[in-house]
Image (cartoon, rainbow, N blue to C red):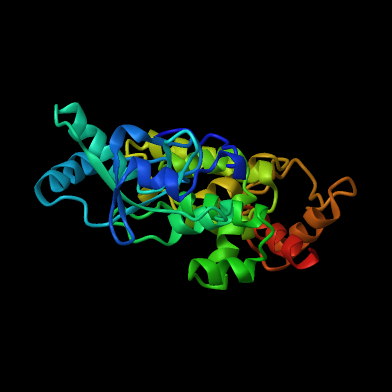
Length: 303
């Protein structure tokens, strides 16, 4: 897994022209063949951070046997180099082939026009045909950038050929604390789970604690610590346990303490929402663990 770096936008005075392209490529009708050594990767442009080594090795073998059918996208610069936009997996596979001792490698690409914007480049990456799909958290980064470019959610859905609900979920994920995002990126919970718990655990701090507790519990049972074994229910239950631990001790319902006179379950010092939750639990003879769920429902309706 690689770290996503900030990138600097290309400026018009950095870009070359058709003469630069003709002087540094083997021309085709629309596509050109560029010497591999003239191509470089702009740090942070590609939202992909997971470059699977096994896949790249397989892709390298395929390129050696069949050649490169699908062209990448590049920008030509005045210094006779080409900035890679789309096709980094193919580029990395060619670099693997180069490391094996193969020489005179050319990368097939389409050269962007000079008026191409950074948003255009991002859409070229997002909407290109690919055998290695983006992870959900990589799609979320694409949505984040589209929002930064000034797009509304409806426009993003249209430009990415996604549904409005899908974009909305990505926006919910983007608002999660970084610690939860890191858990998603590391494969410990899914992005869908991170979105689901947002509606039931309102406090960001409590969501982080519940996620950490669920993952720790999962590891303590010696189950494989991956996202498939830690769902939203497990995290919600962890949140309820954490909430219950903060409540004052109460007598077991079937074993009242005869030496202690009955005390009201609500106290004047309790927060209003907690007092209401206790009252509801008492009225319906619900267990103490249900109070956390009741509090969440009350807070959700208030907000």
